[in-house]
Structures are given as C-alpha cells and as structure tokens.
Amino acid sequence: MSDTPQAEGLSSAHRFVHFACRALLALLVGGSAASAQTAAPPADSDNYPSRTIRYVVPYPPGGFNDTLARIVSQKLSEAWNVPVVVENRPGGGTLIGSEAVAKAAPDGYTLLGVAFPFGANPSIYKNLPYDTVKDFTPLILAGQTQNLLVIKPSLPINTVKELIDYARKNPGKVSYGSTGIGSSNHLSMELFKSMAGIDLVHVPYKGSAPMVNDMLGGHIDIAFDNTPNVLPQVNGEKLRALGVSSKARSQLAANVPTVSEAGVPGYEVTVWFGIVGPAGMRPEVVQKLNAELNAIFKMDDVKKRFVDQGVDHVGGTPARFAEHIRAEIGKWAKVVKDANIQPE
Image (cartoon, rainbow, N blue to C red; front, top):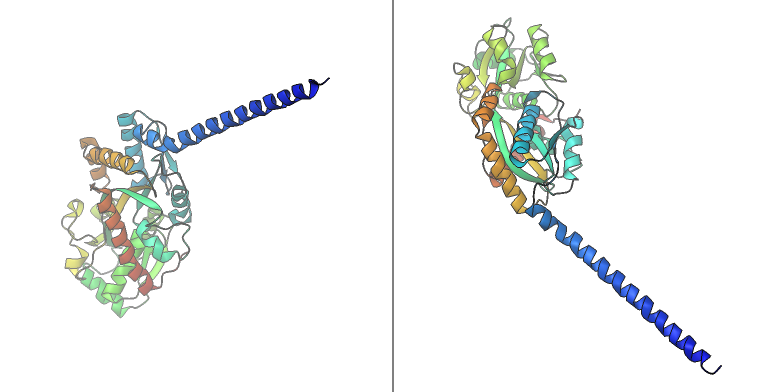
C-alpha cells in the first residue's frame, strides 16, 4: 500500500509530461503555420500569376472602357496562361466597381479599368468611399483620345467664335448634352463655358447614343463627345464639327481645328483610359504587370483596335500614370468648384 501514492505520483508526472509535449507540439505547428502564412505573399508574388485575375470595369459593356478590358484580358491570358476574367460593375458614377477594387487584396489578382471620371470624381463627390490617390496603385496609362464639339446643322453657326457670339446674344437659350455629371463631355463643356464666358443649359443623358439621337432630332443644340462616337454623323453632314478638345488636331478629323486655335486659347481636354490595382501591391508584381501591358499596347493588332476606336495608345511607367492622375484631380477641382457642379 505504501507504493500506491508513489504510483499515482508517477502517473501524474507522466500525464504532465504528455500534455506538455502535446502543447509544445501544437505551439510548434501553429508557429509553422503562421510562418507559412506570413511567407505566403512573397512566395505567391514570386510565382505571380498563378491563378485567375479579375479585371473590373465600372461601366456597362460597350465603349472603349470595355474594349480595353477585353483586349487586356485576352492578351494577358495568352501571355501568362492563366484566366483573366472581365467583370462589368457599373453604377454609382463608377463608384461601385471602384470601391470594390479599393477594398480588394493587393496581390495583383484584382485590376480596375479607370478613365476620365476617375480624376474628376474626388471633386464632385464629397464623400467618396475611397481615396483616389491613397487607395489605388497606378499601373499604366493605356490610351487617350479627344472630344469633338458638334452642333446641329439647323443653327447658323460654322465656327467656335460664331458659337460664342451666338451664346452671348442668347444667354441660357443654347442647350448642350452630356452623358452625365462628371463625364468627359460634361466637364469639357463646363470648361468651355467658363473660358468663353457663356451661359448654356445642361441636358444630361444616360449614354452617348440617346444624346446623339436627340441632337440629330434637333432637341439639343451642341455637345462634346468622343470623336469616334460622332464622326460618322459629321462625315454624313448630319452634324457640324466646330473643334476638337485636344491640344493638337485629330488624325480622324484633320480638317477640324482645335478649340484652342478656333477661339478659346489654352483650352485642352484629353479623354484618357488606364489601369490601376488596390493600394499596397508589391513592387515586383507592379513591375511585371506594367512591362506586360506595355508590350501588349505595342502589338500591331492591338494598336489597330485602338485606332479603330479613335484612341492613341500611350503606355509608360506607373509613376507617369500616378502623376497624370494627380494632375487631372487638380485640374477638374477648379472647374467643378467654379461651375458649382453637384452629383446627380
């Protein structure tokens, strides 16, 4: 009987050692798992890309924003042998799709197609659900085009100067169309109004097609729109072109002067398209994406598709695109403030 307490003591010691070993083993396993998780991003970036890439377009299908996404998705998939899925997430003035990407993991597997409104929205929407500069990683400025200032033929106006004179003599009687608050054609006209010192009536539409149709029907007087959207009507003499918004003349309409040379010195608006990712992307992933995208935009078949859409390919470094975005934000902040533009 005297040896019973001793046996119990030994048993207790054995149990203690057993549980201690199990605890130590769990700690070691947990630590290894945590280390593996911590090391996962670098390993994943070394193998990037190894799974499906999502390309979010904050616009409905159709138009160059969607075309650019289709081009990039096809070419990236062919080059890297991984699926690249285009996801159209329109709505909220591009805010819905943009917010989704701003909150996505910065691993290079979520991209966002951005355009002109990306630089104007910070001034129009006082409570954006993201910070345009801090919450995204600029990847590349893909391309740019210009807007064409067109007028219905029934008005006795043939030049920009004649338009300005007519508007001054008829304040608040000349109407212009746009594809919505903050769109390139809306802000193109607001800048034109400000620099020319004229008063025009804004008529917003849900897209370019209904706006152009109303102009053809004589319901609105003038508009800025992407050159490819209205050039067929200009060539068919259903609309009259007065000027292009860019600094230089358009190759698609070489006989049409720039707005700057036609009566508003210094006027310039460039419609642009680019690609960003969430903030915090690893530099090596950014570099790999930028290099591949630059290579894609230099392909002959891609350049032809750009030209067919009236867009010049640009390319360049992420730093160049970041500088472009900041410049656009500054430029349109003044226009929005001066015109007292409010979101719809």
